[in-house]
Amino acid sequence: MKRNSFFLLLFAVLTMVVMVGCDKENDKPDGNNSNLPKVLLAGADMDIINPTAAVCWEDGAKKTFASAMDNTTTSVFCDGSDIYYAGRMENKPTIWKNGVAQVLSQTSGCVNDIYVSNGMVYAVGQLNHVATLWRNGTAESLATNYQTLYPYSEPTSEAFAVSIANGKVYVAGCVYVSGTSKAAYLWTNGTYQMLSDGGGCAYDVFVDGTTVYVVGEAPQESSIISNLTVPALWTNGTLRDLTPTNQTPLPGRATCVWVDNHVPYVTFYQEKGSMYQSIIQGYLYENGTTRELSCRRPYAVCKKDGDLYIAGRKEQWVGHDLPVLLKNNEEQTLEGAKTPGCVNAIFVR
Picture: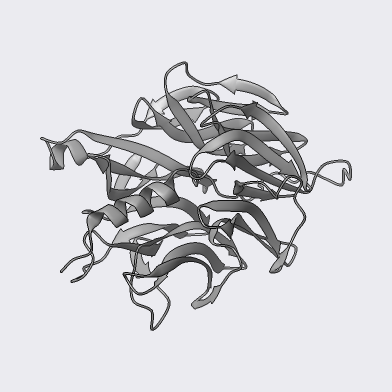
């Protein structure tokens, strides 16, 4: 008998509400200005499952951009001395540049990731239920072939990550049908590639030379679990299931990928235990090996100057998580981190 789909739906709601951003490589060095913060985190204050305020941490000091239900910062990027945060404010896609809000549209939407290259500000997310790329505030809808494949459905799409490399714009995201994630997509200069069908989503992309890494979740056949999706890493389109060796495949997702010296680092989380009694465990995949993290839902990873940073949410008690930043597996001090919240993205200068 297959597992009740209600529990899978609950898992999806609890784990997808917040995480959308990740960290980004800096393609424009900041110089030696010691007055600039080094470690910047985007995130949110939380109730049990919903964001309640858009916040950030700069070298551990907390700032609040907007205090209202469903406000959040999802991504952060530094360009010279300018600091960009992205997310949503009052259910509108928003970018904060040096603390000043720029609302990209008066209609509903969210910016899930931001990247600045050669003076151009790239942002991706969702606008009016369509995956969208903004260039310096001008919106472009990202095309898919899902309406052709499923003409009687009402698909919506969303973009979760953007990266610029080799003169190309790479965007990771997915298409939903009837509220269920159905296909992972990678767009390269606007041309789409389906990475999965029948389930799955792409949450981050990192380009290392000619190798394109994409992470997210992918469908897997299961005789006991309906609509199972597992944490996934695509390397130039080839799928790898990140479920730890000798562990029963249970629902999970990969959230962020970083490459240092041609070695990929991937954060992911997955249910662990039996299908009837499980916990959510965070992991780091590093070039073929996997280890558990003291972070229930890691959302971001970055390696800089030999130091490994991982951030996300750790469990305080059942139903409530706290924001957490790990540096070389040691928890760092974050102001206000004793109340529910999460870290969605990292940028390290």
